[in-house]
Length: 247
Image (cartoon, rainbow, N blue to C red; front, side):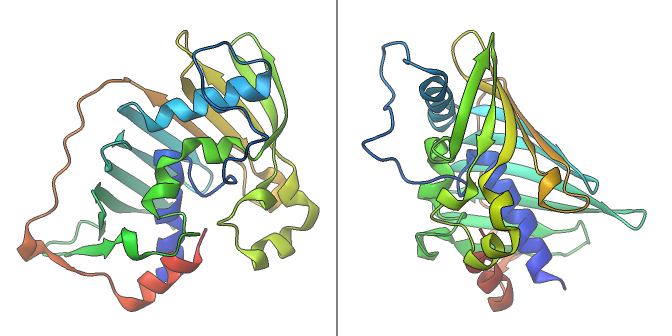
């Protein structure tokens, strides 16, 4: 089984849920969320991103390679329920992921009798994208934004991925200068909440393309339960290793 590929897909779900793992820790030089109107487009984008960590919502993501995901999230309550489909060679593979507190459950495919893999995410390294703190800190992603401009309800700018504390040094080395200038656009609603994020990864490699994520139905009820114990097994060591190293 291709554990590294599954790890990448799972981390993509983490990014979708909380936009974590792609930014840097908040510093004093960055604006904090306040009740006052942000002073500039970057501050407003940061404020809009932070709101994703405080509200329940529905999410949907599409990216090249026949990859789609959808589900619900309550990051403040550490509850996420997502399903991702990956198209390959004319077939579709489904991966289900649930986050309940500090436990993540992952099910590969819909084969009868398939077990859910369990992972205690609190034991992951602090730099892992799957660490709950990183998943819930949507503002961390926004801290990687540079040269942000705003036109109406739409932001545009670039992301400097080298600022991420979860970035893989080898991957950054391979990407070179490309990693510091990844274009993005984003939209907000009338209440200043982020509703769409489009990251254009075309420059990072052939077939990379755009990843589009939408956030909607804010305030939607989110109820996520752990699978029955009889359907759960501990995550294989190889998969755990891949998740711990992937960011």
